[in-house]
Image (tube, rainbow, N blue to C red; front, side, top):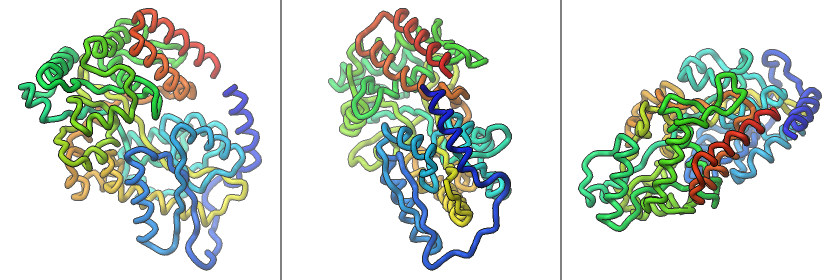
Length: 420
């Protein structure tokens, strides 16, 4: 099915491609600002921060006006894929870096090399920028890096007599039990079921734990699953034990986990760095945000990156393309505002700036970028990632036999790969 979709996109894109090389001379702008459209998938806690950035961009100058329409996260990529195929996508889009490989081969994204200055590119961290290149061309600009981190309630640890953050899986389990016994509150808040979103936290932790042991999710040639071994077994058994031992709620969804941590009902909570800004706004919540501990060996944490891209349009307007580049330049150059949501900027000038360093927590967990786990560079990964969320949810909440669960996960992942 996905092969057919890619073929359809490719056929449509072939008819729309108007830019085959570098930038064209832009015609004179008409009266009023250049009007651009953007679709946002930022509907969670970081949405308000992104909306505020759009407003500040619009008020910072009078040449470009950006209109931002919010799309529910679960619907975003379905709507975007349809619009890209039809050549009716907005002027600028946001894509997770891991999703670029699903769109670039179809020719629906504009190569940016001829439009972005070398001076601008030199300001970016090398790793996230290079991850936006395919076949030697740049198809997106990285806006942030957002690894999974650990949030800790200081008051609950103090009440349980715990003076140091856990460094291993065993220490984490022991600390979670101590908190539950001393305070009656949950020691661990790992969301593990579908509610507002899929149980993505389980997938992010599973990926991190497998890599911490020296393993990987897929084989080196990306042709098969590689987690049905002691690495995957150790990770799954530990996640199940937290529920079975009564320190982590069963069938806990994403929003409930966030709200319980905000209310002081749990000691440890895992989420992407994007949750930091929301937690900071919670009155009376005294917490720590730290890189994901090396629970099972070496430091390794799941991560992804939001990127900006420019779609190929039926009637590509070079004036709008140049305006879109200006918008992307401003957004990434002012990403200390985005860091208020918790995300880690990708431009060196922002990371070294006073505004970023004035924010608590961010500089501490920005170092976690050195040990993040890159998403496997295969078009199948998006479907694998979502499917693993469902399978891990079933394994953890239903206390499935771990080896049987891993066997089923491996079989399903291999079947997905065979279709790409």
